[in-house]
Image 1 (cartoon, one colour):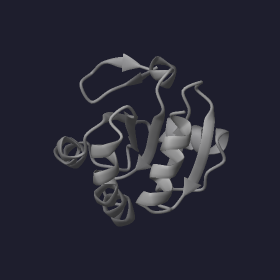
Image 2 (image 1 turned 180 degrees about the vertical axis):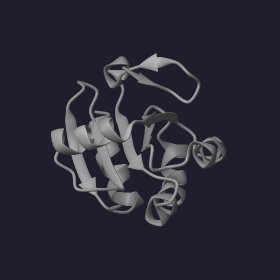
Image 3 (image 1 turned 60 degrees about the vertical axis):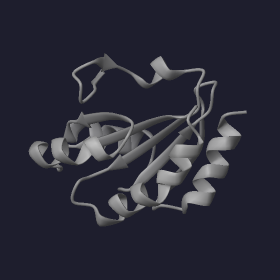
Image 4 (image 1 turned 90 degrees about the vertical axis):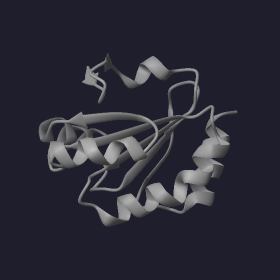
Length: 129
């Protein structure tokens, strides 16, 4: 189980039935932060999507805690061990990496490196159908 920034236990399957956007990021990752900013209008528009953010221990906890209030969504801070296990399991090389999960709970899109807000919006719309 994962624990949210509010201390609630959960797992991704808890959100089944809604499209999910999962963002693997870090506080020290400039491209991650820029991508979050460019996605803001999409988040305003697509309110049915569950926005999930995963950062590992490479993000200092103090910095993570002051960064996340500006990023609306559900935040998880995972261990470096969980992070590398996820990287192997889902075969992604690094961050930023984005997953789009459809209403059925299936991974419908995966990309490393931000593809742009328009592409993300398109993928999220497809996942929400």
